[in-house]
Length: 251
Image 1 (cartoon, helix red, strand yellow):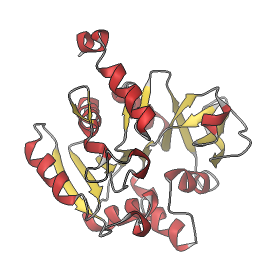
Image 2 (image 1 turned 90 degrees about the vertical axis):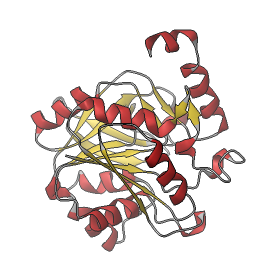
Image 3 (image 1 turned 180 degrees about the horizontal axis):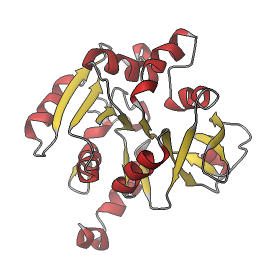
């Protein structure tokens, strides 16, 4: 299995911190945000190769990060060729480009670089292997204002996704979909098919909404904390959580 980390955004909601630095390289708990993700992927025990797709503006910073990183995974850094927020390809555009540039032909983990997850990645991989379908993650969120900012799904009794809507004005459930997914290798060509059919490239949730009408997709439900480094307030919350005395003892 390969892993793809999406890191081509420009972090405009975190200005001025991210004017000249990608948000994935902002420090949380004494190390860059992306390091938490790489460590979790490594601990999951299924991935050996990790591809990080960024942009021209931040490519050299990620290459320096790659040189400094100490881990047992094969890390590859790609640029999507954009140099400003107005030219960004969108997450699905970057997914399709990375698959093409790296010649990925295997099951694929896709994760956003600006999130820290605290669930068991080994259990997520096991769930994927048991279901033998594409899989997303699901977390119960009771705040409707937060649900309106993310993907929201309905699940059946077997945790199959029966409906999915990205950023719904009127959420039909409390199951939010954080940006980490497991795709079977036969699904990878569908990234380009979705884009060629006029699909919205901005967020992976638009692709998931399209995918669930064509293939079975199951949801791995977790209740452990997650941290979305999306704006200055959420970054402050993550830093406070990981810099707390209890968190330092856990680490």
